[in-house]
Image (cartoon, rainbow, N blue to C red; front, side, top):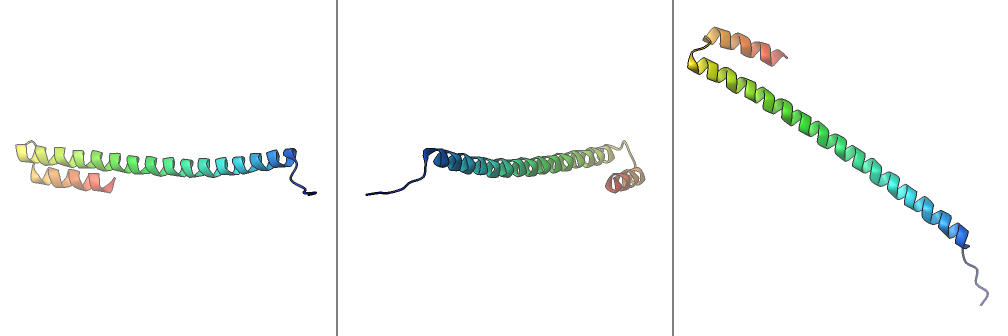
Length: 81
């Protein structure tokens, strides 16, 4: 029974390397996940703000504050930006 095995130092180094690699993979995935979630949240916020502006514009037209021509001009300007 003359078996040879990995030395304790080698096994510790292998364990550390594997742990570091797994940590790098998890951190990389987490970073990309957070970036995607941030972009989606920003897009949703911009869309909600734009919807709010158009709802306000529609309300002003309905209440008679602005004319149809003013409404059309403002809407064209908002769609360009």
